[in-house]
Structures are given as structure tokens and as C-alpha cells.
Image 1 (cartoon, rainbow, N blue to C red):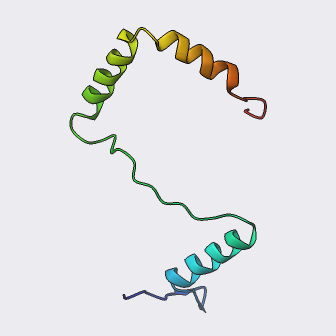
Image 2: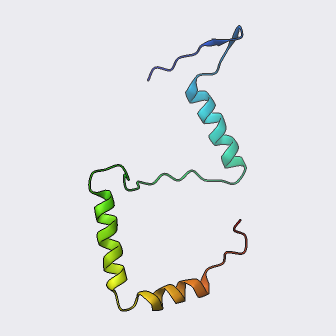
Image 3: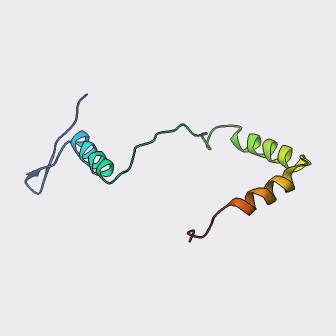
Length: 81
């Protein structure tokens, strides 16, 4: 893989991979773990229609209100701002 190192104010700037490695090491030392996940592409054709379809299914469900009440009773939003 080719990484470019450039001059900024007459100083060599670290290549991107070095900066990323350093940042990740700092995060790990801080007790954090990198997690990568795949998520739906909201710009994809048909995404909004699929969201609507699923929302209508939930709304038509006889257990929707019961499930929402149960979730609201157990959720802890004390630290939310």
C-alpha cells in the first residue's frame, strides 16, 4: 500500500497509517476497543420504502403498545443530555 508523506511548514508529516496506528494505540490504552459494523445504506434506492413498510407492520401489530411500554419501563435515560 502506498502512503504519501508531505511537507507542512518545512516539516515532514507522518504518513496516514502511522497516525491511525498511534491513535488506535491511544484509544486501546484508554480502555476502548475498535468495533466495526455494517449498517444499512440510507442513500440506497428503496431504503425509505422499506423503512415505511416495516413501520407499518409494527404499527399494525397488536403487541406494539405493550412492547413499547415494557421498553420505556426498563430504559435508563438518566445520563442523556
